[in-house]
Image (cartoon, rainbow, N blue to C red; front, side, top):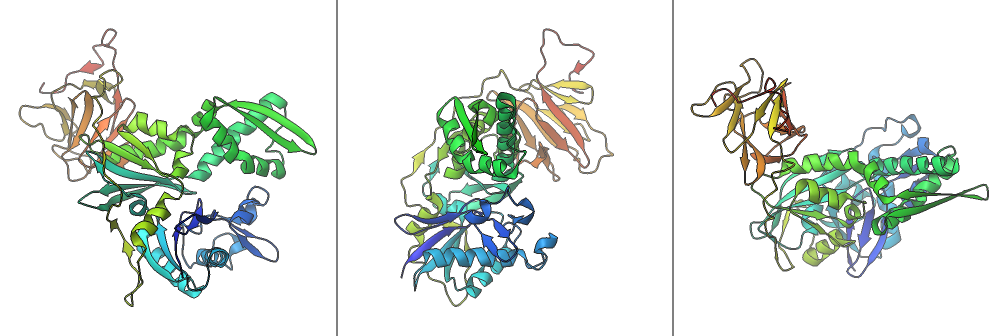
Length: 465
């Protein structure tokens, strides 16, 4: 009788015991003419038979018939049931029990359905723990930890509180920020390299497109350790070769990384030191850790493979289900020594916004608060936004240079949005950011003005300066 741990992430559903990873496969299903297969076998046909593939069933877990006409006799719950049963039959022995680490996108209703499915296929679930909590085994003193992981379709960001233990404070899901979007971007840029260098288009046939997907993991590993990646693909006994710079793979991933960066920056308040905790899956993405470090700041900490399930087993080894059912655990004690995180030096002034642009007029940002709203506060520089825009407060927000950073403070009851994401009280601004107030709202772009060539008709002090 053994307690096993499973990390339910559709990018790689893994099962571990206390010694090793027993099994891992992605959340894919393939419907052939006479059978339904899941996991790695289905993934191996994802580019060969894309119309017969499903890969959203873990994220969109439900009992409604799937919209695809080929799968209309099945629901996402049916596919989850088939894959979960298949995995359990591969790894479990009589009397074994399972504890689950579940990602942020699994809602309460989906958890209840997952427990029902587990019971139906004979998987004894002893407990469920939030995946970010399970993975976090130490306190980050002097910093605020956010756990970052990637699924197939989305990235998950979990801000963690540390009141003597680790617990979930709040969570967000970055849509189109997962592995599928990254793989598609990388396969396109790799295929383009083949076309340019060997006049061979590997996307012309399903067989060679599948070959690109099968070899992508190895090529990404090369990119992480070298400046160039040697590419080879065989078709009809002819080997086609190309070479791509690692920086090209990072550039191709930039739109996806930017979605993650944008949402992560809104999670942190201006005065906080980030401690960004990356799963091994996220850390393997070329340039992601560096992008987060450069754009969000603080320190980035990389977890080892299987860290989520190992952290689960280490602290929940005696977990037993009760007659009252299984509920999701969102806090656990630490079992590793605390880590001191020192606050980084103040951000250099260069590269920081000097002005905000509203319409055709730029307003200077300096050490004095610049307030935006529908009514001018006494004694403050002010940008009057008028009174006819829903969701704008009298004193909505203020911008100011603090400790070498450009900081926005939210004073409203409606919220201030940074690049489309609501901030939590305050946030650090960067050149190119869009700050939105109201609905549909005013958009303010953060810019740098070269004071030596500035057009005085375009740049003004705010009213009341």
